[in-house]
Length: 79
Length: 135
Image (cartoon, rainbow over all chains, first blue to last red; front, side):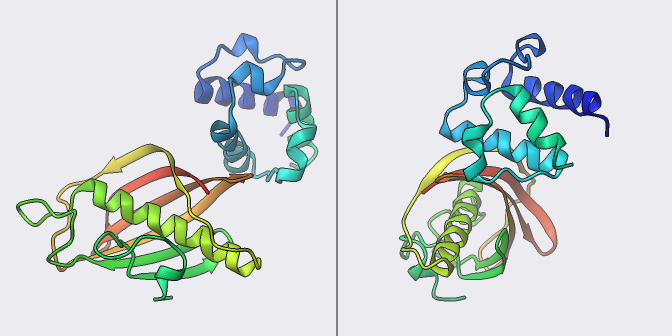
């Protein structure tokens, strides 16, 4: 899967799952603030990445994933 | 594993798991034969869907507790965070029938665990859902 293809798929799923406009999901945007994630909903994002892309995000890696660009890079490097 | 009471706080008559089986780190299955005096039976002796959701939640709690035991940690108690994508297929089971649940952990962030589960009776799925538990 090409990186652009992965990003398009991820943006579409995130927008649908977390009920935000795709336009607010920009590479530099903060994930938690943009999608209004709390500890209960963060597990949804991690689950989505696991199910849709087969990539597990361990707890220890979560602090380093702040922006959507961080998330894209993390997932793409593990596909 | 029949010593379910070492993994979850519920006790009869609210105990809704009879047998728990650890499959691997991320999956397990469980059984419950519905007793005549089960608290979740309605006036027609059919199990209420809430009873099956409670059975799933207790299965998940048992699995989380068992994993903690394997890791050498103390078993702690949790609560249901939310339930999504819940599908209930009637007719609901009756007293004497056996619930069979297969559960998978989808993801876990700190103390929040998201699971998917399917409960079947005689091979037919009666309830499926996703559930988040905090513990």
